[in-house]
Length: 337
Ligand SMILES: Nc1ncnc2c1ncn2[C@@H]1O[C@H](COP(=O)(O)OP(=O)(O)O)[C@@H](O)[C@H]1O
Ligand SMILES: [Mg+2]
Image 1 (cartoon, rainbow, N blue to C red):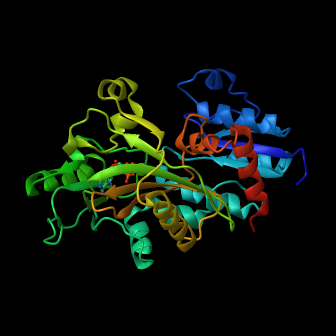
Image 2: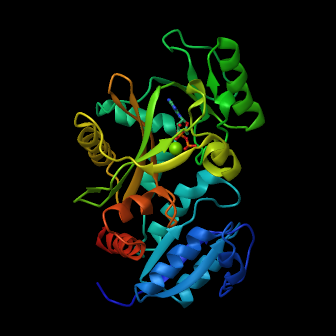
Image 3: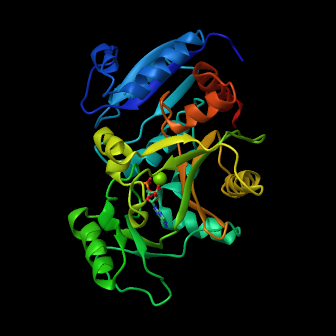
């Protein structure tokens, strides 16, 4: 690998800014573009020449940049385009057409991970355990399927970061179930997925690699004082620091797990990663039921990779510094064909 690369750090911005804009103000604000700040810093520590480009609702600056300042690699942090999260995969597909190595998941990877129903169909085919689920599309009849055991969790079919997930997402009656599906259809204008609620510990497992895979040490979400029947990672539980402090919700290194559970989780994750032909890195959200069965709740292609996020924290646990992690991700992009 050439030592000093021209890296284009590409991300979504909440507005259009001209090429060459330095984002100094945004990066200095710890509440704002902290991931972009961290990655940019790490790329520079690795000796690369970094150009920043934020996209809001037009692709013109990207095409201009590629023409006038063609990078060796694109570090792709785009999650939204024109305020639409489902265009994340389209962005990855577009970058693939430019013929420039690009970090993170492929557009195929994103396509099969973003839709929680499609993803579960693929995993189930490969005998990876997932909660029993049903999808309910807008403008179609909604009913509580006979086979579904209450309580259920009702989520937007293609969202992330727990958007649309609150305590009302857990339904323990037909009425609450119908009400929540209606909420997602009508208030969020999205399709819905309903899953049986898996009661148990929640773990996060990051895998890195194209062919040779490394499973990083597991993290666990501790629900603290949250009542037993309210233990899900809602939007507030993920993003509201006051709420997390109030209930004692925190994510920690999972530590030693009993009866070979750690090995089993790692095996399941590797099997799932290979079955879906994932490249680069991915984080699984996992629940282990009281009978010890390991369920994949979600596969997150291009998960959050700021220094405080699960992926980097897991890497740090085995001595992979943040700048080494970013180096590895760039390396995997160059290796990929
Ligand atoms: N079937 C389920 N059983 C138990 N908890 C669930 C289930 N589905 C989701 N959850 C809870 O809701 C959280 C968010 O769900 P997830 O599918 O990961 O959506 P997101 O993409 O928004 O992260 C999970 O981390 C978990 O705490
Ligand atoms: Mg999740």
